[in-house]
Structure formats: structure tokens, C-alpha cells
Length: 148
Image 1 (tube, helix red, strand yellow):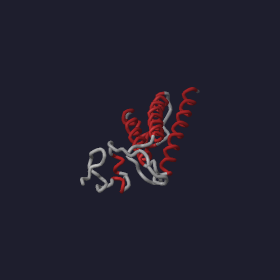
Image 2 (cartoon, rainbow, N blue to C red):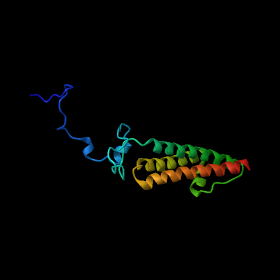
Image 3 (cartoon, one colour):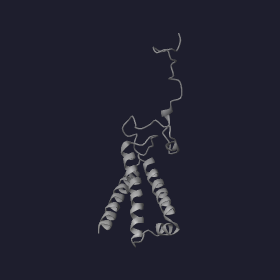
Image 4 (spheres, rainbow, N blue to C red):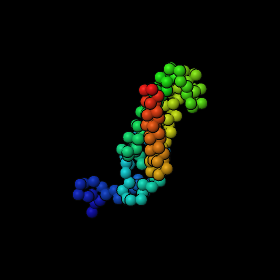
């Protein structure tokens, strides 16, 4: 008797099960992943998935969008005689606006991506929430300064 099932394909139960080992942090760097969720309860604690959840993507875009607005508002504030409170960013501004925005986006982007990649770790997802709320608060401060 052959190993053909109802669909005519060979029985593949003897092949290696890709789910036998957990998703690693390095696999998060790939763009072709398919694992978005965990099948069993308890698997999601301190584990990785190939694709971030919708909530994580939204938080990531909030942080990155707010960071862009923060950079633009900071440049407007400096043009009107203000200064940068962060010493690292103040040094970057002295080198030029492009250098400032590039450094700010690189640092914010890498940090936010790192937290998003660790979405299964409670501290990381809390950190991403805090970062998003912090940036929204910073935008409110910018708005108050610009409107006064």
C-alpha cells in the first residue's frame, strides 16, 4: 500500500516539524516569516514570533511618527531661539539639521524595533507602551510651547 492520502500527496508526518523548536530572536530579522500567533496558551510568554502583532505595529508607528514630529517641532523651536535639552541631540544639531534628524530617527527606530521584536516579553511591550505615551506627551508639550 502506498503512502498517499485522500488528496494524493505523500504522508509527510515523518518529516521534520518546524514547530519543534522555538522561533529565535535572529529569525525576527527575516521578512518572510509566517508565525504571527501562538497556538497554545502560555507559549507567548518570553517567546518570539516572525511577524509582529497588529497592536505592536500600531505602537511602533505611533512612536516613529511622534519622533518625526518631535524632530520637526524641535527644529522650529530652535529657529525661534529655543534650545535642545538633550546634550547628545544638541551636539547633533550643531552639525546640521540633517545630521540631527538622521541620528534621532536611527536611535529611536532601532530602540523601538528592538522592543517590538521582543513583544512576547512583558517588560519590552510595556516599554513600547511607555515610549508611545511619552512621545505623545512630548508632542503635547511641543504644542503648548508653540501655541504660547
